[in-house]
Length: 155
Figure 1 (spheres, rainbow, N blue to C red):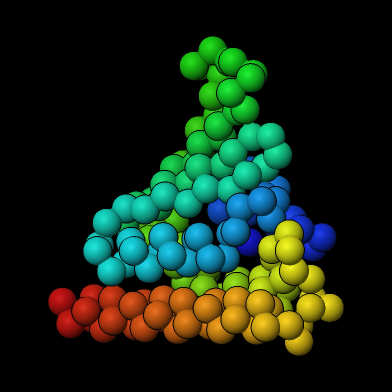
Figure 2 (spheres, helix red, strand yellow):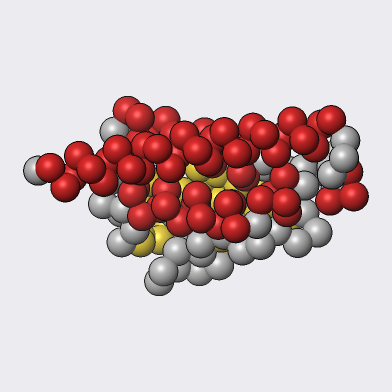
């Protein structure tokens, strides 16, 4: 779903959709994990966004599917019919699991996915604090996914 970050960019793609390149001007790991935790905690659809310079990706994650919208920079007005919209059969639980795994597998790179940090800053207090925050969010998301799986299994 999310590629390994490289030079401040990551690619986002769900099965059957286009690939979108997102910049580090959106704090993808922190913001997306926060939204996923909110969605699973409250059993509500949630929205994640990513800045593509100059446009914006908007992904609405619902229980059984995702809607992806491509929001053009406000200076480029397009007819409403030209605004891209994609639909993916990826539900909230699957989206959250992929998000967790993609960030956990490349934690060092996601820690440095901040315009003010780089992997060479790995000994700085800011880097260590950010990494600890990401680990905490990943643990919370993993716990919520386990709870949801056990709740579903009991039904």
